[in-house]
Length: 449
Image 1 (cartoon, rainbow, N blue to C red):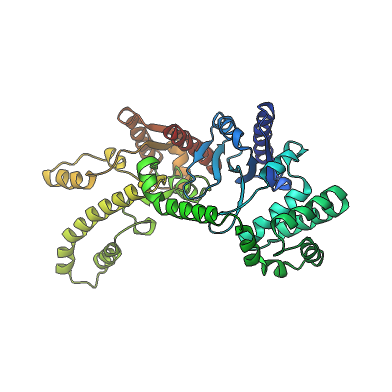
Image 2 (image 1 turned 60 degrees about the vertical axis):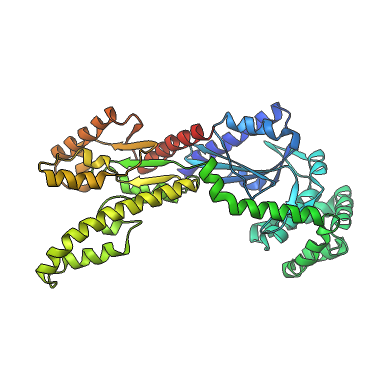
């Protein structure tokens, strides 16, 4: 817990800074839900905001100055997504912003004309603004019922708190009754909602979902249909839109033995913000992430002493051809993932062979040329650097002198690879992860501008 406290404070400080900038710019906004989670969150943290339509562009500018990126929202209107990485805490901060209140699943097509009133009656709750109790009660209820189709434990507790707050405050109680009658009756009346919350009868409320959806469709059937068609169409077109407008990145990881490359690669794959597609480009069968089905069979057959020697001799050139085909297959998969907007991380790369001994015969040169053909130029090459002595202590393989020579050979590649960035691998794995993600995110942000 002690280690997470500085991270929590750093992430919270970033939020406070953003909210202060919004107040200074007189941006009208309010937190939709999750206020109690802000101060204790240690990331990744997603913040749901309602922002006045006329203030959205200025809100986006505030986030852009803090290295946030506006993510594509194709097929997810009216939502706008902004993602940023906070290096000090090593956490991601995501804003899910709406300018109008729409509900439903899988498409938010049912509009409730309450956004303007919510912003007019918002309340100051440092360091931000929150909805008044009657508005938060109604919007949170509709979010759970129509969007999520369930009332999870934390949301149940909050709804009960809001219900008590509304009943204690006469003006809020009266307005909540009016809003339920305006938007939801006769499918749901205040009396039914009040009694169900008092009894904590969540199942009874869930059974009213279809009736409430039909009630909300009244007077906006054409608009609901248009929103559904637009969202579903753009979701189908997302792969094409990513390929034409927002392709991903190629990132190659290089490191001497023992520098922690595999640990870093797995961390990038699991990361909330990057969600990297990891592709292992080496020959270790156990480490393979993408490969041909023939590779494991060939490997087992060639290693099996009971297989006749003539057959194993015949299979060696087949295995070589399979290796080339597998490399090209992995490269094709990498291009496909990049066209889908993914960050593709290569564990090992062709540059590893550049520090190997040069081929001495024409056959070996031809073999190497085939193996090195078709590799794309990565947008960034990340080298994990550490002294040979430390690398030897970590893994106990080779010798400190050999590892130091390998390290120097990798560092010398900087002259040939201007996109190479060197990271100090003597740090803890978490520090290496943070530094790596910060570099990748800076590149992604620059590419997205």
